[in-house]
Length: 174
Image (cartoon, rainbow, N blue to C red; front, side, top):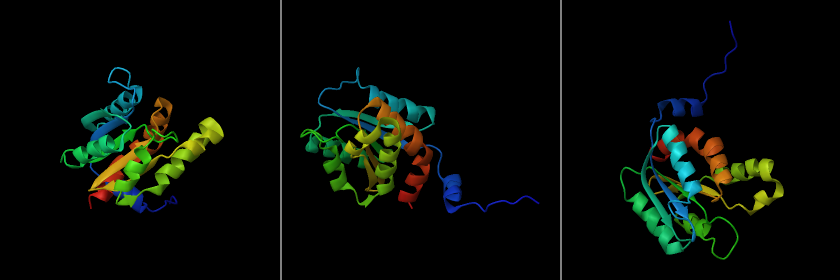
């Protein structure tokens, strides 16, 4: 008889979660356009590859009102269950996504930012402390805010978001 570990609650939750999530992708940038938004494109392609649906895509200036407006549009759209934001998480005066998103979160997923910075540290070293990536729940939706570089987006999506997306959304919707 083989020694088997009992299934963990997380594994059980993942098995019961829906398989496709409706998403909104938001790029916060004063310079990006649809043609040169490599990070937004990467998020959309990775979601599509995993069978998730991008319902809305917006590029907004790194401005609190514009970011808040995009999030409000996403939370008012029934087909959107997760809003994935890239850009605006640095330390310059123009980087306001963190403050805007953090102010809207009803419940925080502190582990996302912590793990993202840990994984970033493994790739880029101590500069990882400059990231203010964050995530949580707002109006029954998952909101994730990550840095705007394509490498950072791929790291967040492949290592953290995609493996847990259906699980997190199912928990938020309970």
